[in-house]
Amino acid sequence: MSRIIEVEDTITVGALADKLSLPVTRLISELFKNGVMTTVNERIDFDTAQIIVQEIGLDVELQKKIQEIALPKRDKRQSNNGTATSRPPVVAVMGHVDHGKTSLLDAIRDAHVAKGEAGGITQHISAYQITHNKRPITFLDTPGHEAFAAIREHGAHLTDIAIIVIAADDGIKPQTLEAIRFARKAGTKIIVAINKIDKEGADSNRIKQQLAEQNLLVEEWGGDTVAVELSAKTKKGIDNLLDMILLVADVEDYRAVVDAPAVGLIIESHVEQGRGPVANALIEEGTLKPGDFVVAGATYAKIRTLDTTNGKPLALAGPSTPVVIAGFKAPPEFGDEFSVVYDEKTARSLAEQGAIQKHADTGHGDISSGELIRIINRNNKVQELNIIVRADVQGSLTSVVDSLKALDTDEVAIRIVSSGVGNISDNDIRTAASSDAIIYGFNVVAPSNVKRVASRDKVEIRLYSVIYELIDDVKNGLSKLLAPEVIETDLGRLIVRAIFKTTKTEIICGGEVTKGKMAVPALARVMRDSQKLAEVEITNLKRGPQDVKEVLEGEMCGLSFKINERVELQEGDHIEVFTRTTVARSL
Ligand code: GDP
Figure: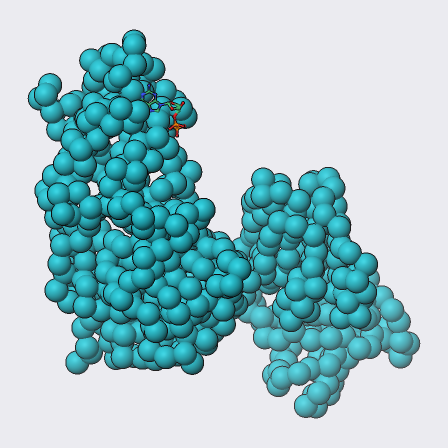
């Protein structure tokens, strides 16, 4: 009987390999064989997992784990791996511009981070942890929903609580609404901070009224929206806000496994003089310590130093802790998930896989089963045009890439091997040469040294500054991959009256043209009633003893044709003569 393994809606490649007792590199290479480039941290969905298990031929049956609806998403994943214990909440601050997000984050940090600890890295802090009533709270120190959305886009369910800051003298504004939408979509708990209550013209009741219009009815009016009135300037109400955060955390009961190798998200990185690449990261589960081998995207580290975001050394760091990691070979990227691996060799090879993945740029985040099926189908029959796209700015890159993707059909498709902003580089040429890709540049140039390498490596670079001209060119390229259209034109029909000679390769017969004409050279179908016996090639045509090119309707003729398979021709069979031409198609 097959082994039954429970898998949730999505699972990281690493965790799936673990469950299947397969080396993660084997699973990655199986996915790779099917055209899916993944890293150990990348999530694939249940259906993809199932397809790949079948492809490998394992005697394993995957079953979807029933979700416990009441638990927050992160806990569900963690409940699998061990005993989950309470962890600090992770809080983000959002709201309209000038409503006081930065002031609030500063006020919380200034009041609660012990003096003297500051220093170390101050410039690049992007998360910090404070202690309130002896309990830690983690704040993402990047106000605004752009950062929040970016983190979400990377598939991380990082933020537990969103604080929506609304200035009491201004009220709900478009960005406030957007922030509310974001938080709701992410399933994040909302706490409203009614800020600037010290200001003349502050009207908390008006804000509560506006909140009610957004289906956020505050507790004092009988709803369940937590709203705190405060002033980031005078610090009034801030302790109350922190109390509320802890209260929500108690109700929601955020948990994570501590006793496991750490996984988490890179939220910022930079190169520091004397220290090399340094990354800010947030631990999602497990414990991180100096000396651990960590892989993140296309790079890895043996952790040289592990610090708090205030520069205080840590011997250990657990879930929801923002940390600063030094020891990376190269700076990891924002949104890269990191995880602790067993040894340096594994870290290095997984980072190499990560680099391939980044090159492949198969889009962000999770790979859906739909995409996998499409890729597998593609491997079978769809012709692909490999291209690399470079554009001057992210906006034009997105529109070029989106327009190109729209050209895909069931027969031909574009595979964007890599894409990016900026001029064409040596690296693009290398990638193009190894993947047989054409490089398209939009409003960018190819420096002359790069052009030289391209011509040496026979890589084509095509530069455009008008988007539809670029798209047309790609369309032409795709059209060439389309199988040509085959057109068959019937010429005429003959009824077989006598068979003169049959060999393994040739038949000579005689008959009467009943429709149209006979011609040579031409192709013919040998028909018995309505059944096709063979397709043959007419090699000779005779009217009487004379070789001719054509014989017309009503005339008798002799006919020789080449056969590839044995045909038992009989009197009364028909020969239908036709020509076949192929015509190039275009999209
Ligand atoms: P952000 O754009 O949401 O990050 O807003 P800021 O924190 O930069 O604040 C915008 C302006 O509002 C600044 O001039 C702050 O000094 C001011 N401000 C922020 N909070 C308060 C407050 O509670 N009371 C008063 N009077 N002014 C505030």
